[in-house]
Image (cartoon, rainbow, N blue to C red; front, side):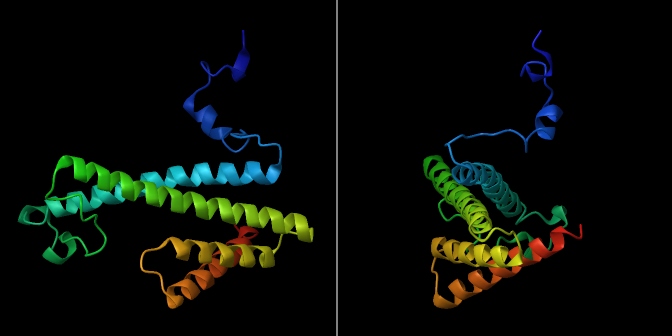
Length: 180
């Protein structure tokens, strides 16, 4: 009766195929729509990444004393600064709070990076009338600087490194987009 557009008859794979065509938000302006969609999509990826990273470190720490795991003591020991200090050896409430805090921070970082980058590339394309490597380099540099501001213990050197890395990755992605 409703055809292929009825959500009840559409498969998961149909949804994935049409993921790029769907519009999540309509704020009345393409720039705002693009920023919001990029933020939400990347924030989801950031949440999954943060949770999977913590699951990995929890599993590795569980194997720390296990010689049957096949991991050397260096490989099985979690690196300092990579795990959440509140997640182990304390109450479950503190553990969950630390996990939520870390996941929230990474979710916002990923979303912010995607939203800023997407908005800048769109805005520069509209302002200059062309989408080229220069737009990508500038958007990547600004986004790298914004990301550096969210990192713990940021320094001048770290800021410069993030700006250069953002510009380089963004420019390379733009230049390689035509090849692959």
